[in-house]
Amino acid sequence: MSKDSIRHFIATELAADGAKTEIADNDQLLEQGIIDSFGIMTLLGFLEEKFSVHIEGDDLTPENFSSIGTISALIDRKAGLSAGA
Amino acid sequence: MTRLSVQHEMDLWAIRTPEKAAVHDGKEVLTYADLATSSNRVGQALHSLGVSAQERVVFCLSRSVHCLTALLGILRAGAVYVPIDPKSPPDRAKGILHDCAPRAFICDATTRPLARRLAGGDIPIVCLGEATENTGEFEFDQAWVDRYPAVSPAQEVADDDLAYILYTSGSTGQPKGVMIHHRNIRSYIDWAVHSFDIAASDRILCTAPFHFDMSTFDIFTTLRSGATLFIAAEALTLFPEKLVTFMEQQQITLWKGISSLLMYLARAGVLRPGRLPALRRVLYGGEALSTRWLMQWMENFPEKAFFNVYGPTEATGISLFHRIEQMPKSPQELIPIGHPCTDTYVYLLNDDLAPVPDGEIGELFIGGAGLARGYLNSPKKTAQAFLSDPFRPGGRIYRSGDLARQRTDGTYEFVGRADHQVKIMGYRIELGEIEHALSALPGVHDVAVAVVSTGDLDLRELVAFIEGELNDDTTAAFEQLKQQLPVYMIPRRLCNIARLPRCERGKIDRKALQAMEFK
Image (cartoon, rainbow over all chains, first blue to last red; front, side, top):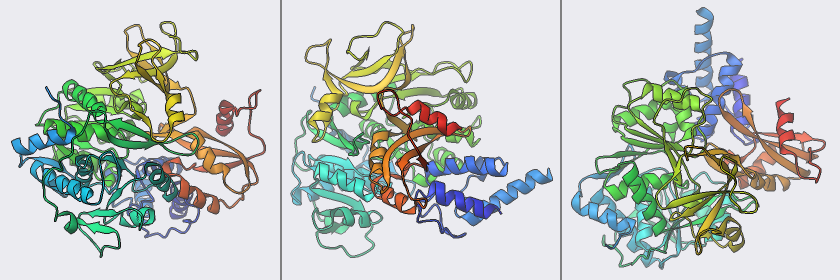
């Protein structure tokens, strides 16, 4: 389940805040500052390695990275594409 | 010829080209006339609050045109501006306030809660821009500022007066305030405007935070040359396509970016021939940029000029620079940091402060017009870092802590650090400051922090190795660290370790630590 591993990664590696382990699917990661310029690069490395996808410039949009739900949907789309290819 | 200070030069542009945009943040625009008016009002308002010459005024604002109003208003009052990161952890920001003892605190609606927490009741708070709630006690809003006349406070500025203080990471846990004179800025900006051919027609992008020395290049070259500054919102720097589109829409002609951001744009695949047609000059610095990313930029944009720039906050801005004339032959090629700027000179010295033989590695010492006065309230640290020039009587040199080598063609190349300072995302980080914060956690006996690479992204992260009995649940530990350290300084992982590897004399063996992590 991509959501849970993305949630775990963000909570432990990006939030730098052990208390913030409860990140809901719809929590606004950008508005809350959970993902910043350092965080997004770390997150990309994780997503590409973990899910064997390649995330390109067109995918790097606020819409795709606004919440765990939208990141997970992006990964599902990318993974579906590569599986179908 | 009498030389003018930053604010006076800006006033000349306000007369020559009053309707021209001085600063644009993607939402709001201030013309030169607007900026002259708004900053004069802030200057007058600060006077009325009792701010006098060379006293400090903190500003902590989200990225908007108001940053320029605040900064210039402070300079007009003859005061010294001290920028604080709006994301600064409270303990760190409190430490800075305690050190610089500001007479006023300028914020906006977004940063007001932090301003209240830090300064509430003790220091007058001036909240610029749209107000969102009633002002509290000892607080003043934009409407109050606007009641002051838009005339320059009659405040003479001497060359030796301070213009700003920027705080950098300190090894003992206390950030150090680097004091920069007006003449430091003048010399730097004279050189920059000439070397990069900056003119009123330029449209300059600002991606650097204002508490970061890279921002001073953007601000002061713009105001000197009557150009337009475009402040990019932080969100833009997260999304490469958005940033490139913004640069295209605003027809940016010059960008001095942090190396990691150039790397990010290259990696995201948004660089394509024909894009960014207005951009002529790209400067990068703050840390090394892997040559393969530079090659991507140059392959896509052979028509643009690329410059590698280097310089510590203590020497104001850029100390050495190198124009990359030819495409590197391979990703293994090391790009030099080049030659010293005008009015700047460097030495490569050994531990006894004697010059190293030609071609050998030495510590880089910098002398010349960019040298800061020193660290605020820290004569001891100042004396350690700023030494008498052993070769030029009366001169001073700054010990950079960077190791370098001079090539046969005369250019310098950066080799690494002589001490325990590291750079992550362009931020200078003293490992000692992090270790100091970690050592205060319950159960921690001793600690060492190392920087380890992650994957193939040229990304590095901080890992803390802890001797002692740190609780398995690190929630409380991270919570405590967050109070003291900015997010970029908080180790991503806390690892318990039975014994830290040590060298013969008991010093922590940092090489061994990194090797352990790779296992």
